[in-house]
Amino acid sequence: MIKYHIQKNAKILFVGINPHFGSYSRGVPFSNNKMFWYLLSDSGIIKEKREYLKDDKKLKKLYNQIGKKYKINFINIIDRPSRDVSDLRKGEEEKGVKRLNNIIKNSKPKIVCFIGKVTFAAFMGEKKINFGFQENIKDSKVYVMHFPVRGYANVRIRELKEILMLAKGV
Image 1 (spheres, rainbow, N blue to C red):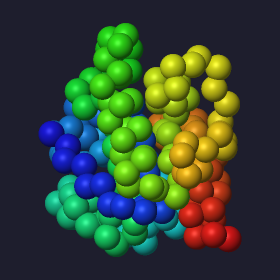
Image 2: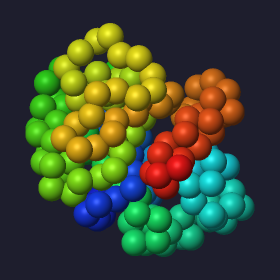
Image 3: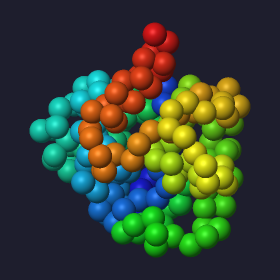
């Protein structure tokens, strides 16, 4: 099970659709193959290097402190783990969308970053989604990044660096 640590006024709230079984059992979002965490490191959002992140205990410790250390939050729209997004049922996201809207309203993150078009489509209830910046939600900037597993890492690193610059106010 993943326990989410939502801090008010985070720089970035990363939003996924739902956890993979590996992330769920580890208790750390986006940690099934750890690629997303490596990208956070490679982009400079976090300072811990890949070698550190490979250790499950160290990764769990970092996750438990990340809100305070880096002002970063994580949440999944759907809490139930699955092997693939195709295992999710239509309408299963409704409760999580309401929860996410409340989290954005109450915690006021500077940027909400949706990980993948599928995640943003589930949140918005729309099919046609573009990557990059979207209309704000409340006072939060919104960004849709590429899913971290498929494709070239440099695209994701560039996206994360762009988000980091905005989060820092540069």
